[in-house]
Amino acid sequence: MAGPAKIALVGIGKIALDQHVPALAASPDWDLAATVSRHGRVEGVEAFTGIADMLAARPEIGTVSLCLPPAPRFEVAQAVLAAGRNLMLEKPPGATLAEVHILQDMARAAGVSLFATWHSRMARAVAQARRWLADSTVSKGRIIWREDVRKWHPGQDWIFEAGGMGVFDPGINALSIMTEILPDPLRLQGAELDVPANRQAPIAARLDFAGGITADFDFRQEGPQTWDIELDTDKGRLALRMGGNRLEIDGIAAGGEDDIMGEYPALYARMAELVRDRASDVDLAPMVLVADAFTLGRRNSTDPFEF
Image (spheres, rainbow, N blue to C red):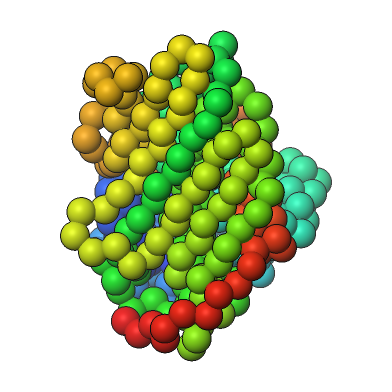
């Protein structure tokens, strides 16, 4: 691409306004030229309420970024690829694995770029952790990923509907880091899912992986949020804090910083690279593990949950 390329952002909700819009505003690669949303807008940017209208009216916009919930995303994604536009997907890339495989085939046939993003892989210390672990043997590990759904998804009932993923919406961030940094693949052996009596998706989950690795996900944590990964290895203990943004080796700071705001700028830089190279990047490993958890998971009914 020569100079900033035009991009449209679909789904103007909290995550779009908090992360996508600031990242695009600061990007040398992209010009936010249009939005598509039933309710949200970005000041100074042409707004549409339907994807078909935007695609028809703005043929010069070559790339579209989808920031919709997983369940309604597929039809919009299909329309974008059918129109021959490059496509970037907020995590998770779809409501089902089959949907994403279909989108991969469509992108390949259309000769456009498809990027299934995992923003936590762009956290400041993840690449350094991956390099440190490359020649290590992991003996056991713990993932503790606890946050407040009322803070991050206020009033968003969709997250607890079928297809909304519940606590796996943040939990998949941890899994995206683990599948990126570990030298060997993760394999789920068992899971326990706590599902509120009035909801369809879990509010908490505990996972057991081969190799002595466990995960504790919870959407009910108030106060300070916890996004930690700790791994015991033959070289020492590695810990990623702050969602992968701070690295510790044997309890001593070794890299990164306490800042989560670099992830989305890095995603959009990667998308620009893919478009320039006419390439795609679709790794479904984190989503496979979530699907496995729903398959293997023992379900416990818990107290009803209301926002």
